[in-house]
Image 1 (cartoon, one colour):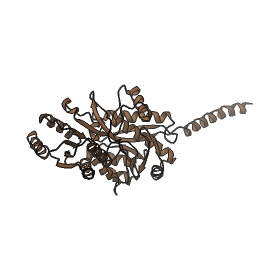
Image 2 (cartoon, helix red, strand yellow; image 1 turned 180 degrees about the vertical axis):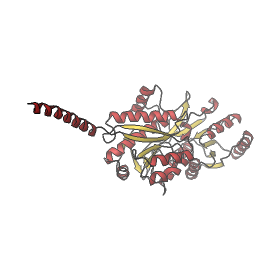
Image 3 (cartoon, one colour; image 1 turned 90 degrees about the horizontal axis):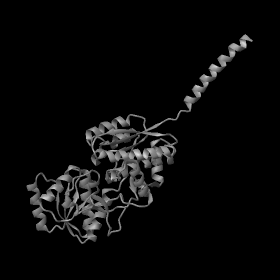
Length: 377
């Protein structure tokens, strides 16, 4: 009897130990997703909100491959050297194979090889460079319309509004600006639109005044802007100082940051864009409502792109049923994906199916205008 009493407590102890082991083995693993952006800048907040909203929805829907996700936010300061350092660090870890981000076209093209070397895939939701399809950039998937497709839509809009002579201002040395201008020139030539002048250097107001006089003498009817960053604010300041009355056709980059556009110039501005921030039905409207509920404000293009890219990454892995980069690439090549823009797919590594249209300022907000071209993709 005494012997049995000794055995019973030992059995209970062994049972408790085994229970602890079983509980540990069934613990759910969390996937860490790397996101890179200039989060220290004010304009980084909306991008972060878009990621956060998507992450919460993905987890509510069961996560990625039935695993909950967390976001690892990396700040590259919109600086190429920092972007390289961040990409190298991310490449060396074993986190989720799809990385989302980087703000600059030049940064993305610089880090493409690093991600490819480490079997990572980069979803670039903000840039618009068709150069991602060139050799050496195999890691990059462009999750926005290319500069080529947006330049084509801008040309069609100009032609539909009876404009045949334009002056172009773009950022010196910037890959996106140069490629946009090249595409614009190609489509403009076919549409009978003449580029009377192309400027990439505006150091001071006196220099800019000489450009304006030249545009006057050459009969420029409109100004086309492919400027990025601070060059946008400088251009608009100079346009005010020179009393500009020409219509200004700007690329989508003007939406990425809250640039100080003078009121007298806003009414002259038309922007080639693709996020319908006034949608009242469909998936875009559902996203807008969810964002408003979560953050008490309207989303911008950056928030929409961040939200779309993270959902797309989750859907790609779930369709692949794998965290292997090659399996995910195969899924991206063979499937269409439901997004806030509707059903999309990749043509090589450039997203296909996002409608492009013009926006104008109404009450200090960029909203879609009645588009005479019907929009493009």
